[in-house]
Image (cartoon, rainbow, N blue to C red; front, side, top):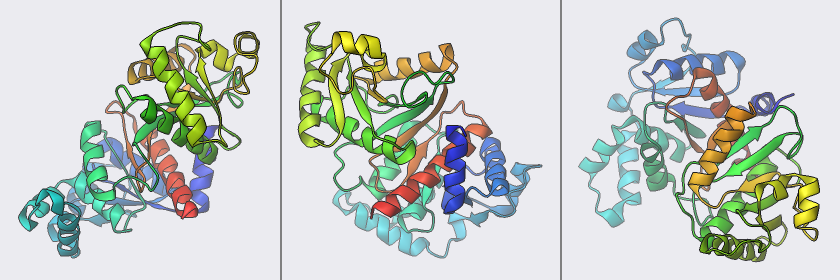
Length: 334
């Protein structure tokens, strides 16, 4: 069974409720219909029911829950909560009401209040528009230093990682993390690998250098990040700095880093910056035909996940399933 089908089966085992706030957009509505038909999650759509159903066309979303911010009975409570969360910014009730008229902000508040277990958005909004209300309302998870993202990469030939499955981070969110941030991304990505993929994470801190083979400030950053991560996460198998081939190819790993417990066997690849990560995952996706699931956000108190604006309805279904599993994992950890 491939990764996505595993996620779908896990989602079905403990049904969660996911809000899709871009509820007049056809891809989201096609995805909602598919999710409901497959029994992957309960779906909340934000807006006027009649208009949403009209926009859905032949996609059957009748079994979704429809919540319209304009006549939501809980809006007074939502406004009070938003004001309390943003009191340091001096937010007034009028400003809170205006903010909550935005479907994404309203959707995040549904997650905050436990009406929904997670949110998926971004098909017609930028990442910043998805992330901003999540951080304002949900905040970061306990013990989290930085919100980051990862992709689950599933390679067809199964040569690298765990039968071809690897986690790549951070490929979509943090432009140029400092050593402490990079260390936190590594620790959170190890947890995500074990939660989503299963098995033990083996984390490689990637660089253009392996164990001192090159000298540069960029290498120094990864060396320092590796040191911090090893101290902060002593139970995680983690090593660096490692070149990509030393990280995943056993023969190269044993040659370049013979003392490493990770070299040649890594299943979590932590990139030094977003340029390397974003280019890296897209190279693997396009040249190797790998499936790329994500970006999945990690470090937020409850699951909120971003979509590529070029996503398909099938992509949205996959992210909904992953978000549902993420909600299950976070609940189990409490």
